[in-house]
Image (cartoon, rainbow, N blue to C red; front, side, top):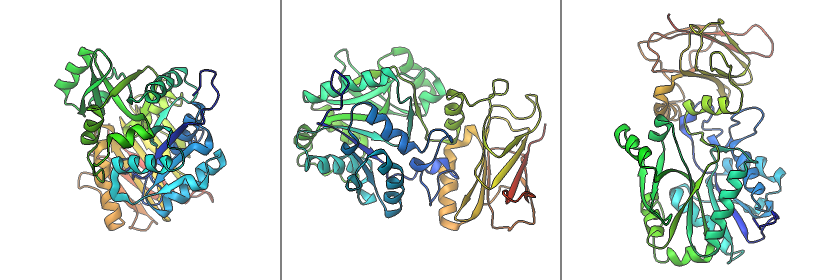
Length: 397
């Protein structure tokens, strides 16, 4: 972005939209990956939010490149991006075996072929940042200035919540702002130590570099499938700097993050701290019923939830088949296993500690109840024309 706020013709954005995002199952699934999921009805998809965010920092829509890894992703990306001015030829499909590092490399080389002097912002597509946040724009402006002079830049934010800190990757930096070390998901003891030292920030995965400078730095390196920490080590030997942002940043990586995002967006109930979307009926008016939970019914479903505490409860259709997940927030990381089982078998099983009653519903419903011993699930056909299934979830007092 130029100093007067006008778009910079040399500024480009590479948005990486090729991942699966299995830990948001069943919102994300084999027919619609996480980056194409609407975190709330008002926001549009995560990808669309990411595109808008970088356009607001001064990237021209024609300078946005979206990297995908299959025909379905390319089509979904087109559905989200073309209406925002992104060019169809800038939706760049690569092979999935390149992994994250290879995808950034491919995106940079794609842009270099168009503009050898480009300054490139690389970003995941599964984050939520306030689009008009002045601090974010200031951080990006500083990062772009460093990159224009030949530095490599990673943008980070401070995390003050210990649990969130433990679930994310971080980078340490010295007094000159140069990154010295990357740390991935520290345990509680190390997280507490790092938070108190004060020279560690959460790695948002947003990095900025100049295309020609980048190609010089990685010349002769085989980046295909290279682990991200090894790749960053290459840049650290050059000049890799940290920009410390103070903007609100949310990694929408797991089901337990969705409630936090909803609360931050003002969608939570002030009394019970629940977040609900869709055709949902919550039971009770006291904290003994539903508390600190994320309850979401996608079109065609209704959820009636009773005595749900600190859990995510979601109903969705996947290829016409109803899929239901109730997961304790503390077990959100296990959703990848659930998603992989569904992709492998097309069905899900409920553990022996749970009771499921199906009424006039095919037994091939995909149902998973994770980390909620004693939870009871009743699945029945709805009585209203626009609701095919109801999900009734109960927990013992």
